[in-house]
Image 1 (cartoon, rainbow, N blue to C red):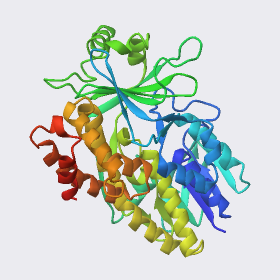
Image 2 (cartoon, rainbow, N blue to C red):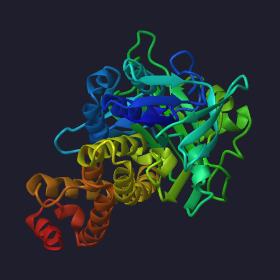
Image 3 (spheres, one colour):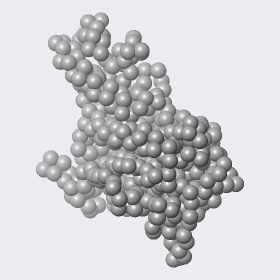
Image 4 (cartoon, one colour):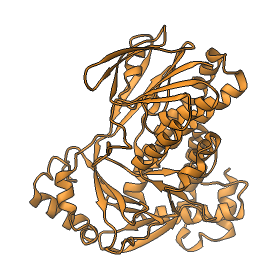
Length: 446
């Protein structure tokens, strides 16, 4: 049995605590925020999550799958809303597979409840990590009232998000690090249910209002409402508005009326929410190494913060936990040096790959989902998959519905891009896309 400190009790830290405690380790979780079970720490700045295949695999391995199933909503397709209010529904897979929408706050609360059921887990809230002694796996925490505690452990996990205090300490050594803010920020928009609690939109779709340089999206909650998000550039350009030019009520009203007119009746207080809710940044973090000897490791956003456009940030963090648990099975709970070495070596390339995939999907959701050529490509790929499932699996399906390593999925996705570029350039492709000729041409390039 080891004494383990987890810095950060969010989505990944809480699941990691369950994995490690069930192996018999004594686990202390320190979270800088208040207990989300007693206060809404995510108020006004949340983006709904989706649990995909990788997330379920990890939740199942930790023994909490059934608990989480109680708070999710299945989502089978994207629903695009164009500027005229027309709808276009595009399924995620040809065999009716779903991803599952879940409230960030509800999921965090559910996992903390499950973690606290275990007698060898202790949760500490309102505790900020002030310092980490990497060599001795010792952390200094300061409480909200100024009390300071020194906590010695055998192993420390930094699960404290994109601006990790544990990672900051690791950066003082031989450490590579990059931090990139994308040009877009976001604001939360809550879509209410009807008066009788029924949803105003199809709850089994991810709703997207693609507008090229900006977009809005919404994912269903169990109460009939949706958690929506407006993504827009931090600074306006000559061709597109930005948060810096939509500042007053009048500017916000004009902006939504011009670009999201069909959403305004669905969200009567849309302008009020825009003015009230905070504007938040989106950041990509890459770093190396993720571990320090047999003492310290980064996990989740602390190791690989990404933008939310593939819905894989949480799932990739949960896959981190599952891989770590598998390595403990392989090398043993007393061989942390070997375990952490292989954990970092295996997960680092995949952390970089899902960052690239997430930005790729942002362009797809914002710019391409309303493009006739993109829609045609999806139809051709669906046909190839249906007729030759052993040869063609679209990138989205690889990422969301399989355990294919992110780095391998990205490589295969790029190969598919090159093939489909040539397929779409075929003469009269719009008329003959269902033909055997097109099928043979695509498969011949594999």
